[in-house]
Image (cartoon, rainbow, N blue to C red; front, side, top):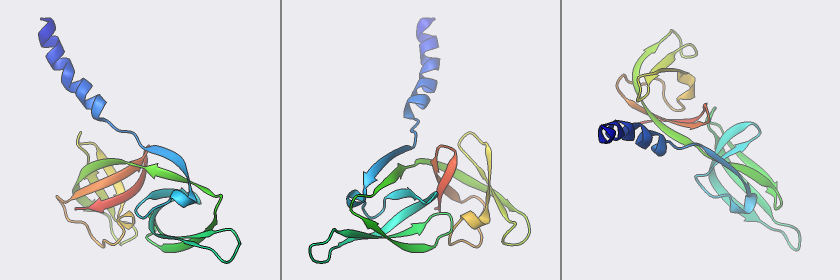
Length: 154
């Protein structure tokens, strides 16, 4: 009897053990690299390019080119050598697109189903680079706690 109960308990334990939680850590601007996701000015940004710039005997400055993940805009920011930024390693959650509802481009809502068939409603505007999303497509949500950082459609 005990062995049967243990067999049924293991899938739940394995599911909880495989869950990952988003991590945040402060990193110096000298440690920033291409592809990192940072939290800067209350926005999530993905680094596209990073390089140091030094003139003469002065302190080094660091130019970081990044994309704002909520708007898709590319920006360049100059940082001093002592600046620390928040690096985010988000959770990855695969969902399936069920349907798209609503009218104009601003009002369209994409309804996704996660692995437990919970519905998640996301405005189409958050799908940067997409004017429409096909039903049945797989969308990968990158989340920091419950906040959506980035969406990639496969």
